Image 1 (tube, rainbow, N blue to C red):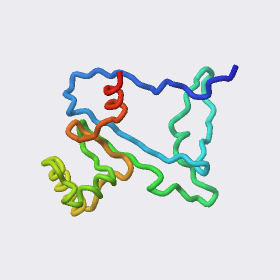
Image 2: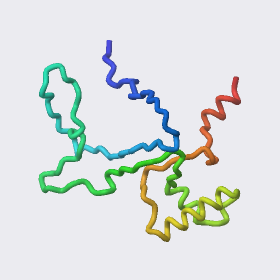
Image 3: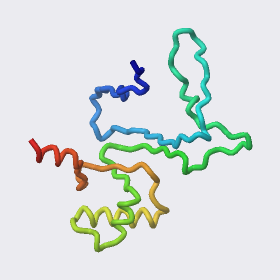
Length: 146
């Protein structure tokens, strides 16, 4: 019988806090992994320790000393219900004719302010908030069929 190569464990956990949810901050680090920045395995110092040090996942310089460019990774701290626009949304809301609701006009104003102040701080990481018109098609289609 074939051995399972991947795990369904996604590392989910429950963290309880009495702080208001508006104080929640998440640090997201996105890094492109390619064959050129492979992992250097460092054996565990202690017997029975089956954890890999996070430093193992840091990009290693190539033989020429070249480090991956800024486009290869992105890190950002996101607050609860904080809106980070995708490139699609930036392109969409720059055109005033695409705005259909008061929220669209608000997003347009925010994007114009971002462009005037030097651009957005994120490149690939973006968020949806409760007020966005985003709908998961699987949820909609699932509720239509018995």
